[in-house]
Image (cartoon, rainbow, N blue to C red; front, side, top):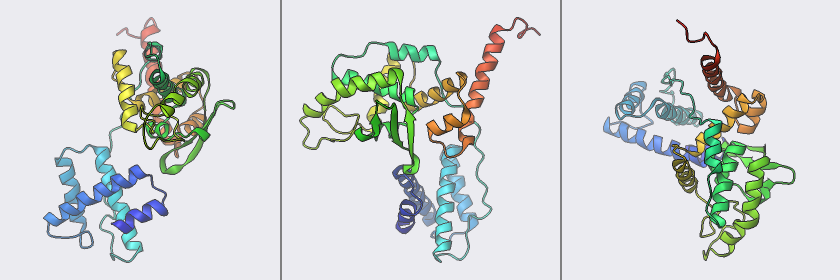
Length: 296
């Protein structure tokens, strides 16, 4: 298993989050096999299928089961390649179907309400406003925002260099309210968090800092977004802001390929989920405005 994880990291360029998830999934798989009196090397297709059945019985959703299947399949492809097993027990193992789920989005008016609320005075207020504006204004993932470094931000050219899943690099435009809020934070917020933290190990390169001068964690960003969403009467998460960014861009006429580049999707089919949201918006507009749309 350790060799497989190293292979995924070095040769496949898997992200730390993917590696951690695969490791957890495989440890759970190994534990199930132990209960059945076998090991990953000796497992059969029936053993794998039994494990997936146990995952469903434990209440795991289709996406989580899919990820477990992906981890186990990748593991056995590696084992076959290395000559550890002669046959792959996951061959022709069907993936569970995932019901299509539209992403959570909020309306433009709701986003205006969140972003127009008063922020606290001081460095943390500047930081929190910049976090919300950049997540919504640039469509970043929470890990991308937390991982931002100062050299990656160029407000003069209006570009932010982002490292997405698998360490893939892309340039994302930043302008308007997001650029202004980030500039205010870098000028009036970050220097104080950097110098008055009292932390023995402050992070000199991180854009978004905690009150101790260390890189702000993903969980801290999640808590900040949720707090300001709650004040506006919304159940808000960082990914909701990313979804809303994409949906509002499409509603405004953005090109799907350009949106794919901004979001960092490897496959445009991932971006196309937002066209369903856009069609839902069109239907809502039609039903609410056409004089005969609701007649039976």
